[in-house]
Every structure is written in C-alpha cells, then in structure tokens.
Image: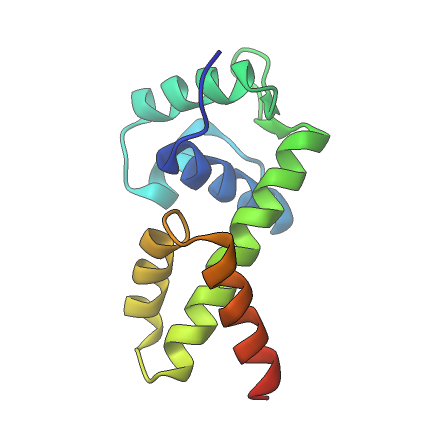
Length: 123
C-alpha cells in the first residue's frame, strides 16, 4: 500500500480547497492550483485512491471520501495555523503561504501544539 507523502498531502489539500469553494475538483484545476502537469495529478489521484482518500470515475470530478475529508482538514488546519503564525511575525502573505506549505509537513505535533497555544494566548 502507498504511504502518505508531503506531495500527496498537497494534492489532497488542493482537492479539499476546490470542493470547499464549490468548484469541481478536476485534474486540470488541481494541476493549475499546484503548478504541475496533468499527468502528475493523475498519478497522485491513483495513489490517493489506493489510500482510500479519494474516488474518481474516468473523466469525472475527484471526490473526497470521509477519510479523505478528515485528513485534508487536518492538513489545511496546519497550513492555516502556520500561515497565520508567520504573518503575525511580519512575513508577507505570499511568502507565509509558501513557507507554511513547506513547514506543515515537517513540524512535530508538539511544535504545532505550542504554536497553536501561542496563537490563542496572543489574541
């Protein structure tokens, strides 16, 4: 079975965002959102299917399974928390967004919890 990678988390998050914005999650839209080629998206969708995180019939929209929605929400929450934290430090939104995307995959749960607590306490 496939393992969840940073790249697959990014694909899953993009699909989640598209669906949350009431847009159909199609291969071309995910490719555009992530600035990748469509064959890369097709390969990632195949892996996400193996992990039972998405479903897709040929040439149809990509749908998240319940498990996929849960995992995607976790990834998006990490991203949002880190972007907010970086912006609080004075980092511009575009840079904070890019850096949060990199950081969300490598920080430990303990570090994320500390950042979450810091952000709540500093409001």
